[in-house]
Amino acid sequence: MTHIPTEADRLERWALNAEAMEVTGNVSLRSGSRIIGGVLLAGVKIGGKFEVEDCALHGVEHRTKTLVRPALEAVRLKAQSIYWKPQEIQGVVHLNDATCDTLNDKLESWPQAGQLNLDGFSYEHLARVGPIKQRLKWVQISSTREGEFSPQPLRRLAEVLKAMGHEAEARQVQMEKERLLARDRQRRGLAELDVLRKKRDAQPEPKDHNALQDRINVLWWEVKFLPVWSLVLRHLIGYGYAPQRAAFWAGGVITVFALFYLFVWNFGGMVPNSEVILTSEAWREILAQETKQIGAAWEASAIGQHYETFAAMTYAADVFIPLIDFGQQRAWTATTATKLGTVAWAMTWVLEGFGWLVTALGAAAITGIIRRE
Image (cartoon, rainbow, N blue to C red; front, side):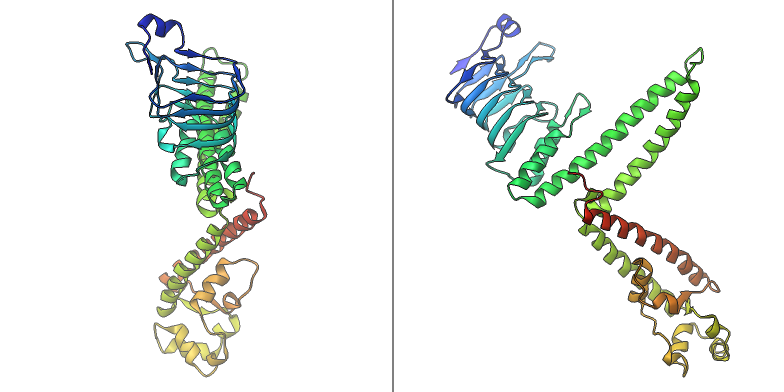
C-alpha cells in the first residue's frame, strides 16, 4: 500500500493522523506500507502492540530540504509493547514521553543522529539487548537535540539493563552518561562565561560589574579544572562504576616504579635510611670502595647482612600504598648525593601522592560515595 499525497496535502495535513486515539488491540504499520507526509500518533493509547515492520516512513520537506513534519510523531504514546523494525525512515522520529512494557527493536533501523528523540521514553524490558556499543550509540544519538543534552535515555537504559541482569553493560552505560554530563557541563559553562563577559564589558559599565566578575572568576576555574577532574575519575575508577580500575592502576604503577627503583639501586641511588648507619665506620668503609652499587656493597658487608634487604617491588608498594607499612621505606631511601638518586627522591613524592589519590578514589568507588545511581 502506498499513499503519496500532493504537495498541498503534504504541507496542510499528516498522511496519517490518529492523535489521542484509544485502541484496545494492536496498531500496525506493516510490510509494504510507504507513508509519505508523516504519521501523527501523539497521545495514542494502545492496548496491544505498536508494530512498525518493514515499512517506509517519510516526513515532509520543502524543496529547500527543511523538514517541517517528522516521519513519526508519537509523543506520549502508550502501548503494551513496541515492535520497531522499519525498512526505511526519512525524517525525525519523536518518542519522547512514550511508554511501553517491552521494546523489540532492530538497532540498525533507528534514525541517525539528530533524527531521534527518546527523551522521557520509558520501557521496562528489551527483547534484544544487542551489542552494547550499538545500544549505547542508540541512546547517544537520542540524548542531544538542538545542542541540548538530556541524560534520561542513558539513565533509563542503564536501569533496564541492570533489572535484566546485564550489570556490566549497565555500568558501561552509566559511565558514558557521566562522560556526556561532564562534556555538557563544560559546554554550558563556556556558554555562560561568554555571556557574562559580554555583560561585564558592556558600556556603560553595569552596576553589578563586581558580581559579574566574581562569577566569571568562579566559572573560569570550573571550565579549566572540572574537565581534568572528570578525566581523572573516568580513567581511574570509571566515575565510580569501575572501582577495579584503581587496582589495575595500582598494580601497573607499582610494577613500573619497581623497575625504576631497581635501576636506581643498581647505580648507587639507594642508601640505608638510618643516620646511625650513614655515620658509622662500616659505612665509611663502603664509601671508600668507590663502587657504583653502594647499596649492594652494604648488604654484602658483615654488618649489612643483618640489615633489611632491599626489594624494589616491595619498596614501590610501600611508597604507593598508604597506611600500610612494609618496612622498606623505613630501611631505605633515595640519596640526593647523586643525580639519579635526586630524581628518585623527587619521584618518590610523586608516587606517594598518586598512591593516596588512587587509594582514596578506589575506596570511595567501592563504598559508593562517588557513584551516583
